Length: 311
Length: 308
Ligand SMILES: Nc1ncnc2c1ncn2[C@@H]1O[C@H](COP(=O)(O)OP(=O)(O)OP(=O)(O)O)[C@@H](O)[C@H]1O
Ligand SMILES: Nc1ncnc2c1ncn2[C@@H]1O[C@H](COP(=O)(O)OP(=O)(O)OP(=O)(O)O)[C@@H](O)[C@H]1O
Ligand code: SF4
Ligand SMILES: [Mg+2]
Ligand SMILES: [Mg+2]
Image (tube, rainbow over all chains, first blue to last red; front, side, top):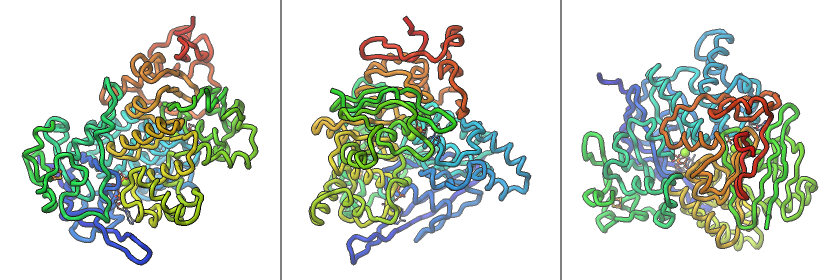
């Protein structure tokens, strides 16, 4: 069965103006030529460098920001859990009000019914109803994040944009949240666009993984291929930098190097060039395009043939 | 020699007790880790050290001895001399910690001394040190123009600006990608080795904790339930909660039960882990809160099974 397309984005470009000196502003591209499809019941996970444009892409899906070029079509209701849970919760509203508000606006139902659903959802994310009477400041970081998740779920959205929803949670709570998300997908057919830095989370929830670097998608693959195939040099670096608590020796602190290129110093060439361990002169000839290796895997790199040897 | 000694620290609001008689020591030049589930009291414990507790939460009892001075008895003015200069803090929430109407440069230079040019030079140096690209340009940016990870690195730069002797780092790498996380870990490790910077490192990330801390204290519902050298904790956790944590990590998508948070005023009658513990026996029901039992000179655990 073919699942319906919920999000279809073609050739998205997004720029910001940044002041580089007192008198000069430059325009830099936070997103470059992004193509994205999210199907019904699909979980798309976005990995990427800090500051590469992940949140910006999330904002385009949510319609909070508009692309400069390209177009994006979203054919379902979308809710979000932001990276910073303060942004999702009004500090002057009790948790109860924060949670009830979107429910009452969307469904014309009674407060009593709303409250029932609120309490159920709180239980699902591992919070008890005692938080209802509290204000956000009286909760710990991870507790706030879970309230934000419950708030996003309360209107039964077709697509959830989750910007690092579990990064402030410990493994046991994280496992719970992932379970809630999976269960919900079974039950309601919801889709996810999940931004994360955690390979564990990506593995646990993703159908498809996108890897982004400086506004470009540099790799796209089916989740089951993670670590089982050749990867883009940046993806490989991510995999290598993962600190495994049960490994016999520490992660390779000295092998992961390199400053992310500054946006003022980007010349032409591959965006990963400054940090790439296998670069050659050809990499300076242009920005490599995302090319399919198979139906389930694409990489943007001039030296794909060399990648084999690294794994 | 100890730099910081937290002794029987209890924190709470008027209604509830949040942190319960927690004690630990950070030696000079040591990286001490606090591990614990969400809501266990890690952030409040660290904030209490420099008395930046949110309104409504107080130190109920206990001592916080930093370089032989009890900080709990210090007046605000003396405390201000210690904050930032002697003890620096990287907050869990970088957005709320930065001032939205000041540029990055203004915020870093604010804590530096010297003339304008010197402060600017030092600010750029600090931003480079934490791996922020385009440091010179970033000085002119406002916090909302930066990504989450960039803000986090600005925070780290500010906290290092005055060469503190103790750095409290509350989840400093959670907002960063793995390649930056490892670089920040390396930066903190090298500051620790080269300058002898002592660090109280808070995280719930087992991988980060394993490779940065030397000793670790595990918090559960406000109790310190285990303390051990880091290798020992990961190889042979003693407390049932610590065991569960290590298991939850290894087994993908583990079947941990719902841990509903309990904020009730209830006084703990028994072991804080009783409800969820898979190793409980009759003894645990009959007795009260277990004491922190010393198993060896370096290992302590709060569980009745280890009673001699
Ligand atoms: N409102 C804005 N004005 C100017 N620049 C912005 C604005 N919002 C974002 N940027 C810039 O766009 C780039 C991408 O930011 P974005 O927040 O999308 O990154 P991210 O991938 O989510 O990073 P992180 O993992 O650190 O959260 C960054 O260089 C950031 O400085
Ligand atoms: N201002 C406050 N007033 C009352 N209770 C509070 C306040 N801030 C936090 N708490 C409660 O104190 C407990 C400990 O909070 P703390 O922020 O120290 O947790 P944490 O271990 O840092 O958790 P996390 O990993 O989620 O950040 C939580 O259960 C929280 O509900
Ligand atoms: S194109 Fe060149 S620089 Fe870019 S990732 Fe591939 S090998 Fe490295
Ligand atoms: Mg972001
Ligand atoms: Mg905290």
